[in-house]
Structures are given as C-alpha cells and as structure tokens.
Image 1 (cartoon, rainbow, N blue to C red):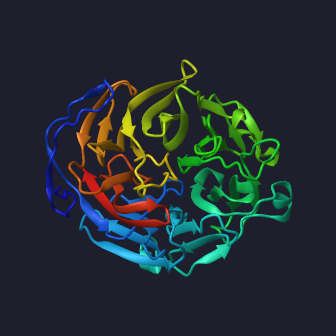
Image 2 (image 1 turned 90 degrees about the vertical axis):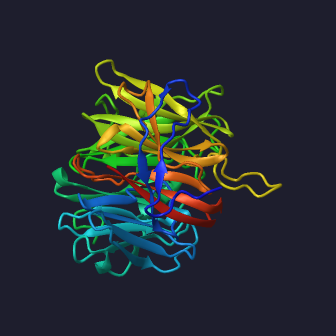
Length: 443
C-alpha cells in the first residue's frame, strides 16, 4: 500500500462511510500531513502533552525508542522545529511522555515520570520563555508524605498533569497517579520549587491498593480544573463507568454546582461525583479520551466497549437548562490497535485509536478509527450537539496505523488548528514500539 503521510504530499479527500447512521459526506478538498519526528511515542493520560506557547508556536514532547524523554517546538509560520532531550534513556515506555504548562513568568514547565516506580516525578523548566533549548537539568521529587502513605499504603508514580490558576494567585496544581495508586494533587505557591499541599483525590472506600481510577483533566487557566475519570482500568473493572467533577476555590464540585468536599475532606469516592455514563453488561465498560468546556459547561469524549473488538466513540455534554447529559454515539471505531503477536492474547484490548477535541471549538473532533483494517485519522464536525456529524478524512490508505490524535491546549480562537498523532510502524506494547509523530495544520 502507498504511504500518504510524507511531508508536502497532498491527499485527495474522499468520504469514507462511518458505521453509524448519523454521518454526512464531507466537502472534497486536499490536505497535507507532515512528520514532526520519526522517533516519538506518547500516552493519553499525561497532559497537556502539547501546548500553544503563542498563536505561532507549539511546544510538545514524547518518548523515543531508546527511552529518552524529548521536548520539541514548532514554529507555525516558518515550519522550524527544535528538539531538546530532557532526560536521556529514562525508560522505554510510552507512559513517560512529558506534559507542559506555561508559568506566570513566561517560562515553560515540563513534568513526567517513570511508569509505576517509586523513583518519583521529574520536572524541567526553561530559563528563556518558549526557547526549549533553555530547558534546565531535570529535578526529581516524591509528591507524597508519611501521613498520606500511612492512610494509602502504596507508593508508585505515573503521569503528570500540571496547570496554573491565575485567580488563585498563580498557584501551580499538578495531578498524577501517585500515593495509593490513586489520583493525587499537589499545590505549589512558587512555580514548583516547593509543594505546600498534597492530597489523594479519589479513592474507593474501604481503600484497596490495586484499584486505579483513570483521569483526564482540562483547565481554563483561571479558576477551574475539570476532571473526567473511571472506576479503574477497563481490563479490571467489568462495569467501568465515567464520572465528572471540577476543582474550584479549595473544593471539588459536581456538574450542577453542588459541593462534593473541601480539600481537607479528601478523598471522595467515584460515586460522589456526577455520573456521565453508568456502564451495563449490554452497553459495555468504558474508557475516557478528552474533556473541554464550552460556555461554562463540560463536553466529554469517551468510549464504550460492548465487546473488546467493538469500540464505540461517544460525545457527551451537560445541558444545564435541563440538568442532564446529552450523549450521542459518534461512530464505531473498530478494535484495539496494538499488534498482537500471533498465538498470544492481547494485553491491552481497550487501547482504542482515541479521539480529541479542538479545545477552542468543541464541535470539532479528531479521531482515529479502523477502516479496512487500518487506523486512520478523521475530522468529525457536529452542528447539533453530536446527533449528526460531517466527516473529513485526514489520512487514508495508510501503510501504518494512525492513532492517538491530540490538539494542543492553550489554543486561542484565532490560532491555526494543529492536530498531532502517532504513526505506528510497530506497536506491540507500550514498552515495544517504533512510532512517529505526525501533524496536520487544519486551516
């Protein structure tokens, strides 16, 4: 088959019918996709894994085949790319990709971890704004305490999700799966030089050390940090549901504005938050993909898995006037994308191709689904809250699977929309991969 994802190569857009009935043919046009790096991989639980530094510059990062953690920048005007190794040969594992936030002084903070070790969390900071060549040496720290470990006796560090809230005196809030194998939060008043507060946010009750809720986050950068999360890993939780809450002003809140608890009352249980999707044996367990906010209300992307070979993408948004969630299927997405060795049972059957929002325009979704045995990237646009969708293929007839798309955060309404994704020459497992990072400027 002919590869289409070569720099400057133009692709004729053809409509490919989705298996849902609510899809419409896209207008025919030509697009081009380019290579950011031939050696990079990432997961979808350390975010933002790409940010706009300004309207003309992106900063992102990934894990290389030798396990090195690398940051990169892209000038959207000139096309110039820069690269900087943050930590050489950290670990061959796609969970270790860096996440980024822009500090109040204009410098960039990168945070990342090993995968499920006791070694801690790592951070690097630039000294010259968005110039990634100015990233300093990595600093390792352990975001826990003896008191937390006594209450939640399991120490293991995975994922980092940093955010700055301007209306809380520019405090730095960082989330990850740390103490207790549970979602954690730490807070800094000095850009990460020290951590004044440490919490376990969500936990089962009574506590068990093997249960692990998965979380995606989104922040307006001002006063709120929004969360969608599951009961645990869909491989382990047969009825894995989806929940929502948000942090604001020292407390966590349900979607209707009712209080869950204050920080000093943490943790809460999943059932204490707002239920977005309650799994049944018929509709299947779930996993989460992305969350943004429009007009103050959350919009959510997640998947349902009635069968391990049948992944369904969903679009849900909260109707504040009616006080309920509007939830539509976008399309069927196929099966898992890892290349299962012959004769072996797939270890990650819920690894969907994945999907993401244009954060400045949540009516636009970029997704990866299986078409003729290959995962391809498509743009789906709705004008009626997710009931109907217009499709524009971004890739087609690809030689390799195209998966895990992401649109950088901090996107202003007038910035060019850039969608990035992984191309899998090989992806057997999150520790056995040969992948590239591609991008497309959707002007």
